[in-house]
Amino acid sequence: MTARPRILLIEDDLDLVGVLSCNLNYLGYEVHAETTGRGGVHQLETKRWDTVLLDLILPDIDGKEVCAKAQSLAHYTPVIVATARSESAQRIECYALGADDYLVKPYSIDELLARMSALDRRIHRIRTEARQTAEQLQLGELRIEFESRTVWCGELRIELTPREYELLLLLARHPNKVFTRGDLLDKVWGTDSDAYEHTVVSHVNRLRSKLARNGLCSDVIQTVWGLGYRAHTSHQ
Image 1 (tube, one colour):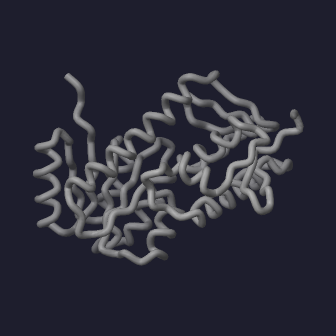
Image 2: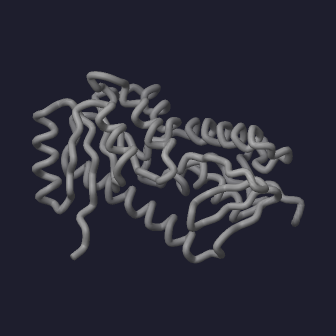
């Protein structure tokens, strides 16, 4: 018997919790609800979830803290932010923190299911591509190991968020190929996402900073002015 997809719902509106839990359970999902951010963080730290559905306005801590915590974990947990906050600045900040999608309340169950389905297809595609390649990839001083989704500089492991890892992996698989910000947005965030190109810039900048802080001297990710980014290697 196939296990039901597990959803962690972090939402303090009890009426909405009831409606979502009832509908999603009926549709074949296993739903666990937490009404506080700290309760959600505890669930993230102690269990594995297929998807997190996260409200930003919580009674104890801001939902953005929960989103950042999800991205800091060693295992990848997809996060869909579902909130009444519709401002562009909120969307940009959540995507920069690593959210996979952003829904504005009120939303329909059909829209939620469509977003989860698109996210699941994107994750499946990424994992399938990884299985079809060699076990690891070398880019200059960097070694990317696919099965463990880890990145090494010599013997030093570099801690990346899932989104940073996917960005680096895409660029590394196509050394010296220039990707526009729109290309990276489509391939890493997906064509169904409403993230902004600014989100790509912030992720690339953080990725570069992490590589530099971990002793990587060479400029592995280069900006091609007026075009986009590329993974640089001296081998043509």
